[in-house]
Image 1 (tube, rainbow, N blue to C red):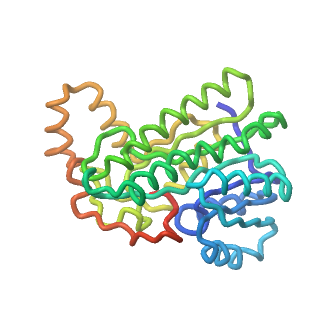
Image 2: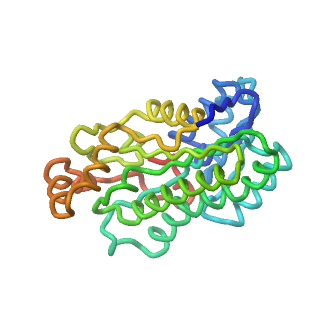
Length: 285
């Protein structure tokens, strides 16, 4: 692991208009970042954040970007490289969730949107900046937001879980590739259980896994990224559940997860935020 400082450097945060995305922006400012680049699909939310934080010494640069669109990402990335320069830290935070049985998912607004925002978005955002980060040759950091549902199957969350399983695999593989190639850019994967952001409104935390405060999660994720940790799993029961899942036979694990930990019923009363085509890329979790 390598220690990384954000002082006098540039941070880019997706889903920066609200929730945890805004908290990452505030954390970068608190630690003396020279510039923070805010990406969000909601221009009004971005304006509110920038207006409330303009008294700081950190330069804020906001861009309305749809991370479900490769064209939007590439255009915005070129603008950032021209206007601000190469980011030192990427926080791939934007995400959505659909809580329903798989056969109830709409092809476009549920399946495609979740895949494009949660998985395609982080990949394309990272691909847009990583070559320049590598060419510069200075230490950097990439923080990818996954989920505990990327380690355990959860009914009524199949498409979301699929994107987070893939996110973990991609993020960790990218980390190893950068190490193998000798580039000083650390990749950290955040793997949290449910967080009190409103995104998972109605969801019930499994046994011994209460819904976490966003500020707590952001603090742990930020510290983990600057320390170069490969994974940050929160709370401790996430790692425990993953270990038991690998050790127990499937029928036994189904009983433990369903009846003891109540993982399988955690989304039964899920309501989430209302779906909006213009403001749906929320701060993940």
